[in-house]
Image (cartoon, rainbow, N blue to C red; front, side, top):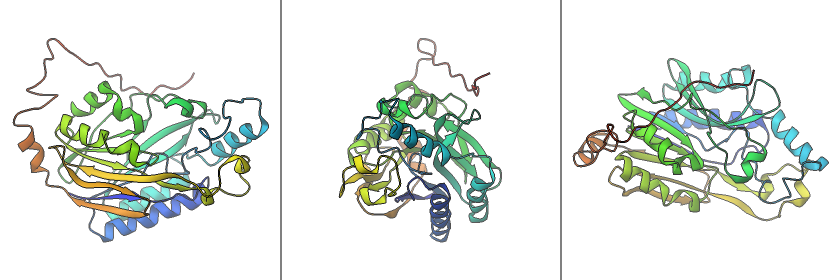
Length: 304
């Protein structure tokens, strides 16, 4: 399987502009022979970089309120006409895609950190909403559910995906291993420090390939009219990418890539998964379901 991991900068807080970037990278990935293309966490319309750099918990601050309203306005309706452009691009390219989006809720007042899986024939096959936003992310993202904890088959390969620190959750990983995953996508906002340890760990623990994909964020990418623009440090690189790929023996196929906006390519020998599971299959012959069991609720939960 040939994979393309897109390490790029979004058109920050510009849904339409970022969708255009995504479509261009899908076309480029297809031209390079990719079977699978993956994008960073909430790439459309970008990661809320102001959370850890401003007083984001000041709920009565009009600028914080305005920043959230801006984020909500540019969030994605995954079944809407704008995102359909991405689905159509995947269909025309004939590859499978995982695309990170900030998904607007049906209530029109909340946002989910979602990883959308798109099949070239079937269209959107799952929307995985991050189970538990991390730390300050809880100020802008709602809790997700287990509806997207599923695997998908493409080109004879079983694929799974999780968002950011969900990949540190032992039970979430186990749920993915139990699907028979052979290639796992870990979508990150983007930083080498986030991806370099956990990527190899998951690959070796699950005896599968892991693609960690992250974005690049710079202070100059923040629009001048963003309400908190003056509070964000100038001349700073907020996230430096960290896209990398590890094999089922835990060794690097591609070490973390820093700073560059690029497509990270790899040709994966899926047969290596079976060879590495000869002595350890965490959800198979090296499990004890009579003693240890995991129950997964895969229903979609919404407010009444």
